[in-house]
Length: 208
Image (cartoon, rainbow, N blue to C red; front, side, top):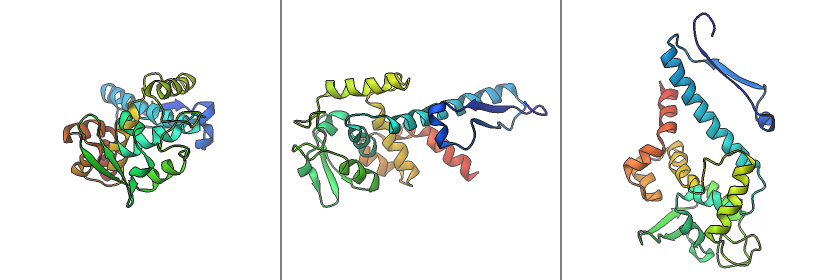
């Protein structure tokens, strides 16, 4: 607190220092109200934890990391990601037939998706293969691999499904409208708004 104004302050973990120019994050919460300061500090801490979690995942040596990136950038259920084949990559898009809904989707290949495809193995007809590169990855095998990393970086609160919801926020940050995001992720508009609320608030704050 300075002159009655509350501040947010947090030490940066040693393994993430290379992403910052100082060992601590500190900034004004722009309020003298303890109640408002507490709410803003809690929201800032949650957003920072989520950001640090993704930084740690990027640095982690994770077999099949492209699998998680595929789920994140396409917004598809993990079971549908496992079923993706190289023959589904057509005309600048990835064709997806969802197992749960039987709906057919075309997901355009933008740079982030192209990076995930470039990192994938070409040893089988499936885009996502197991660690041996002999067949498509099973849910159990992928879940175990992801859990090892979650344990290593202290992120057991995030499961294998979490990456799917990132697609809504990334598409929103790219300037897509809710109806387009829903068309890609096959989520309802209400779910799109729910999972992208934090990013939506940041965008509103930046425009204010």
